[in-house]
Length: 424
Ligand code: IMP
Image 1 (cartoon, rainbow, N blue to C red):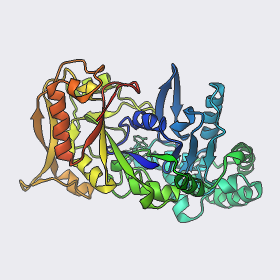
Image 2 (cartoon, rainbow, N blue to C red; image 1 turned 90 degrees about the vertical axis):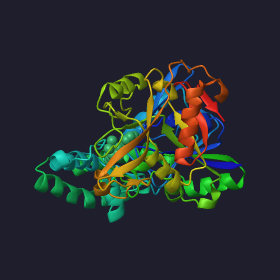
Image 3 (tube, protein in one colour; image 1 turned 135 degrees about the vertical axis):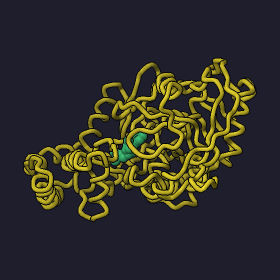
Image 4 (tube, rainbow, N blue to C red; image 1 turned 45 degrees about the vertical axis):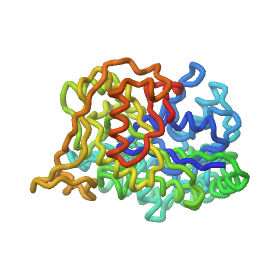
């Protein structure tokens, strides 16, 4: 019996999909607890490529129960697209359940995400424009539409009319946009509700019972710690809690259930969207990392910003998530780059060096990264199967990250395939 959490420790896209996929193969239950289709990961299995945004990756294993918790925001149109795509590849979704409390992304949320970003001009956040922020806004304003409403036409009609009228007013009168035909939206979403209805069940109860029965559970995080609404680089963050604690709230289970929390980091750093990035490389090395690492977004295709490993942010993640272990991905990308730099602290304008990630953007603006230079490596490490097989420089790099981040490195990724992982 175990309940493992896999969480991102940087700004997302750390290769969580791969670690999740490996752990999902050993899990009997896989749970997603926050975010929406702003997330995305690609899983390659038996020569077929699956792009998943909402459905937990455990779906590729026929006996794994896959759960979407109350903390997720669900775009039914996209969700059904994902269902159909899986069915067309012969994957069954009979073991998939969605909590009735999860909030529904309505079309006006997507429109408002785009309009508000446009309105902000160069103060925009660089969102994925999937309606995530506006859906969470309604949730916390207590006027959202939930999955339970979606599968009950009378409730859907009532709630969509009430909130839709207000959204239309905002869209037309504040932003000068085009109003939605509410009857048409309701008609369309009633049909989505019919498809979703068989999947609705209480995910809190299902997870609790599975744990009582001694099943192995994996909670798959979406986005990452530095995108957390409170502990990330606010306001350049997402609107949920991609932290280990967010898993409990977003699923409806207590923290004592959790046995192991794994944080995933890349051997360097990337970020999509706007916001601070102290170790960003705006040079040839940054371009090489982007090209070699294939650093282009799964959801939006945007080129990712790239930079050196920042031990300050990962140590912040170790603390706020209570990490038991780190999985360091894409070490192979660093081969041939020459000496490697790692950020060990931030220097402020008064000359002092800080080790803890500053709580505010203003505090961060006053910081310059302090680097330590480590020996690089040129070997192809993609077929290394255990830690001792790695070049000494690689081993030293990982050991130094462990010291700086104050957390054991339990996995090292040396290539894209699910077999290219060294477990320690
Ligand atoms: P939103 O989640 O679409 O509101 O976007 C807010 C910020 O989070 C933007 O900078 C996005 O690029 C970023 N973001 C959201 N989801 C992901 C993800 O899965 N990986 C990386 N960045 C993400």
